[in-house]
Length: 381
Image (tube, rainbow, N blue to C red):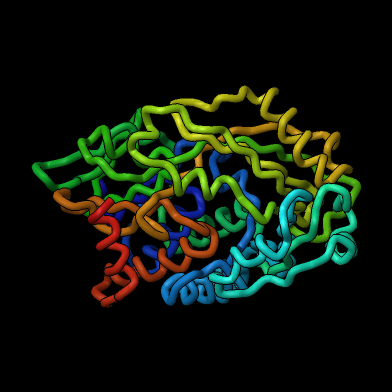
């Protein structure tokens, strides 16, 4: 039986970028993904690169590293990630005071430009001027997240990596050492195993008796085929309830029902297709069925972007990982030799590729203060 240097569980953007970077360091790597075609948070991602959102020295530095990496990633991977620089417009609800909302963004690495209703509608003609009191404008990067992930996987395979489409059901141990995994049909051995399974990471680890505060929301959103209209910017609300929902989530709230929130945003990809809205909830299962979720998303998005309300599309559901400890849960899991976690990111598309590179280089003995800091965060999770 082949013994791999690294087994990477999950081939979303986190697992794909990490598997590629490990293969770049000449490790023998196996990448496992349960779905083909994919059906995960990466596949339904807006693709935004919020490199402007750093609030301290670490996140500001990683944000700059992230945007620079993406600017050159298509060339490195020899595949088009559809990277572009695209304005982000954060709409301010009609009942909110623009100056007050703008002050909430003073802590970020880039200070947004406060736009009047008229200027916001000049920048984004599809906006409904009667639904907003103004908007914030920020420089933003954008990719097609699944094409970027596919590019990583293709480059990984060219490096000699192996990808298998099987669902992992159990982590294997000999004493306290992780020795590999079993899927529904096979067993694979590895010197190291890293869990990059997004919202499924927590349950997979729990099966092995490992408790980590790697949480997740259930998300619902609408995707459309190419549309005969042009959205000029990425639209999101200036007050994003999903981040507040995640920040306020506590251990006690796992018992008490939590609110279901809806952020009315939209983005158009280079092929003309759109992604719009996002309902988020924390609990055992989504409160809304997909038909109800679609109706609510269309109503809220349509109030801000009227031409999108009745556009043909399909509502989907996925799990989105997050954590309350820091920017990511990255590093070795305590009391389990050879078992690692790479999940729970904020600004996943910006931070994950950078941290994948730093993590992989650190496995060759290169000291990295960022990875060491994240290890301390993971130890507290």
